[in-house]
Length: 210
Image (tube, rainbow, N blue to C red; front, side, top):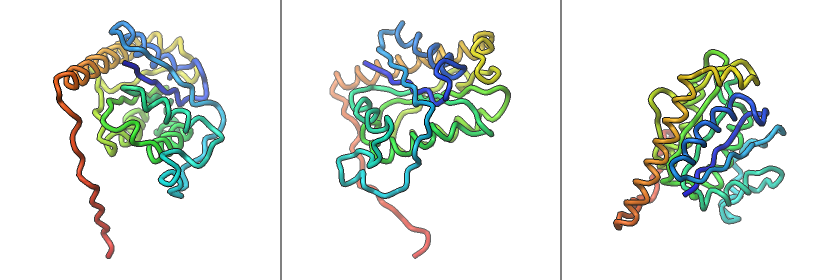
């Protein structure tokens, strides 16, 4: 089993990475393979709602970043953790654009697989940021993995040494990793026992203005 962890910070080994690495360490202790993927420093295109992904087999029409590469990786992954710093009480715009296109074009690769959100902040804005990330999971029928507190760490901008002093935050990451590993093993055991994924009804869309 494998979990992909996404670092939505422009700092490759900053506070967000430190949090993700702590969760990844616990996953590996529980026999789960991990890969931390850096979304990158460059700007990521926003989804323009063109719908072309529906015509070209679940890929994004834009090919100048890692979105399509990640969709392919997600098809064989079992779980996901998305991490972001807090900017103006929301996740990085880079991560949100990345996730919007990832889920719009490649949502089938994520459906029914467990996911978690992780954020790092100097002080506040964490709850709103977690909410924004988690909405991608809950519209796509994905079990949301929790910890013993909201999954956040605190530290000054690009100062991972601060995060290493946040002992509660690091524990939250370890518990999150352990809980993700436990849920993945439960799902695997269910599959082996003949429990299939839910059969989803065809989507009903009700417009409010007719």
